[in-house]
Image (cartoon, rainbow, N blue to C red):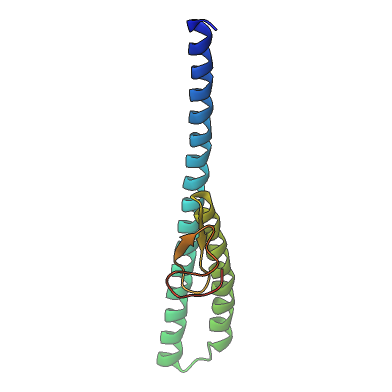
Length: 118
């Protein structure tokens, strides 16, 4: 194998490496962005709950149904956030603990922080 073939082979390896890293960065950034959007929606719902509670206290209006709707939406968003967090952890070779929210080694059977089964 001559020098030119070796250079070509090494350049192909480098190109493959760079392409794989670019895909990883794109996936990680998209996941991070999606999680931030979910958190923003959750914060909006928290504010809406607070306004509904304040409205109920100041006007004696019944806002229980409205608040329950917000809570159901929050539960769905919380599950979506856990899924995004789990996806993000798996991208970096980790597991997400649904009990405490901490990350653990991908091979771990139990969470090192809270001891929950993973």
